[in-house]
Image (tube, rainbow over all chains, first blue to last red; front, side):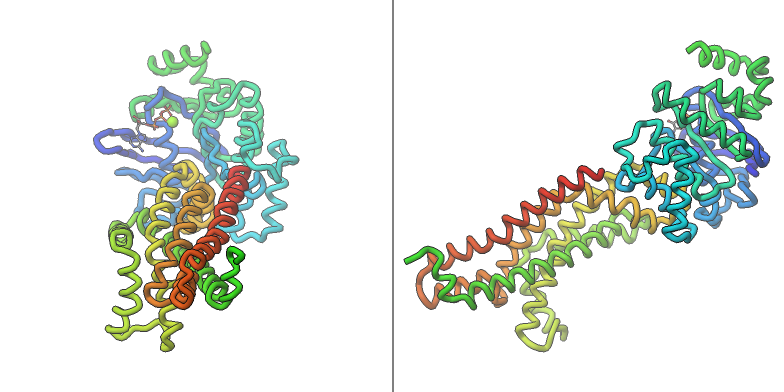
Length: 242
Length: 223
Ligand SMILES: Nc1ncnc2c1ncn2[C@@H]1O[C@H](COP(=O)(O)OP(=O)(O)OP(=O)(O)O)[C@@H](O)[C@H]1O
Ligand SMILES: [Mg+2]
């Protein structure tokens, strides 16, 4: 479903991705962890080409993302993304946020999109918020609308970049519950998170990044019980403590 | 003598002129918004040549006097064989509208550009990550948010434009100022005539300022 081969990426002089090799099969849930600045966001953003790569190959759902002439809009229609800062469109209501892409990028009618929006809002637990603007929603509610907005395109892959790190404790749970359900339904997911509980329960694999490289890629249970790498071990003990 | 009575003694000059001023203002403003938005989009375009064209437009129209531009449109263009209309009155009226749109379009462009750049990058990424094209992203996400944030400065441009339409009288457009001048030359009642014109201008700009404030409040709620 996703296949990185020796992927490199620079920001000017800064060598941010230094030879990423990673492959994900359908229905797999992979959690990415690692210290700040290690390149986690950059890596996940290459998957839908928000960041183009410099060298190597990256194939996502059969599309060759590293090629210049890849149809990015087609790629992105099938890859949903959820951001740390929600990024809901403030001038649109919750339902309109969800309806926009299905109507404009998939050609659904207003009625079909509205029905889809209502169904997804119910799925994420806030059916009563359809006609409310984002400014009137809590952080947890906003993030759930953002997830519903991504799901409305019926993506094959969902990317999450620290979806709960801007949230308070109670709201974190609301959002993680939705993500857990999504994982159990068989969605292919790449999740950057430091929520160990979520990683343990919902993920198949954990990828640990440091300084632009993947230094450990293990099944979830193995990773948490006996991480192979010393750096991963140290990082884990820090994350789990607080 | 009742102050302002002069308006009713010469209704054709004052109210007819006021109507012409309203028309030039409305058409000029609509044109300025369209041109300004287009130029602003060029200025933030990913393609460098387009950005240059946008910048050149703004510099040219901002750095030359409006009166000179009006004279060029009204006297210069016919010399190279272009007229907005064969009828002379239509020609100067249209030249005035176009002149207002071109000149104020440069100012609108700068404001819209600022607004476009002020939209959070995360908004653009979210829109693009959903599979919306660049143009769809502009249309449904970036531009709507831009216009919500620039209502007050656009309001200032609109008010300036209404006042600047008075320069059209210099190329012979029978607007409100032109009407007041005609009455003055006929009656020599300068204070009365220009006083009345001032009040009529205020009738246009006052409510406009009020409308802008109301619109701004509404936009803040929806943001
Ligand atoms: N657009 C950019 N331009 C220049 N440098 C960037 C850009 N985006 C990221 N970087 C740099 O690249 C490096 C990796 O950033 P990245 O955001 O991928 O790290 P991260 O692992 O997600 O970190 P965090 O946990 O803090 O989110 C950092 O040093 C960052 O400063
Ligand atoms: Mg990051």
